[in-house]
Image: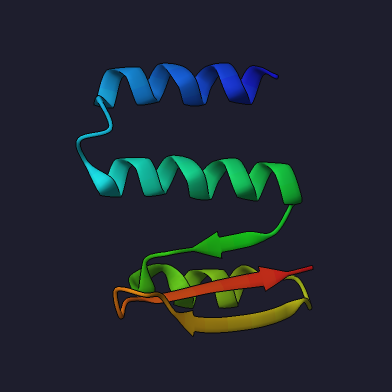
Length: 73
């Protein structure tokens, strides 16, 4: 519940005008909720792959053509 409050506050402060801030908030919320590493920013995929603890690492391209990845433990 505290994560939801934090996300709500951050969204209010950012005004949802910056897509990258919103994406970062969603990524962190998903990571905390699932315990998995996920990134919708291709530049972070090397870190996700390296930090994945023996899980199933996957990469895919989003609708906008950008690389995304996850390490599902």
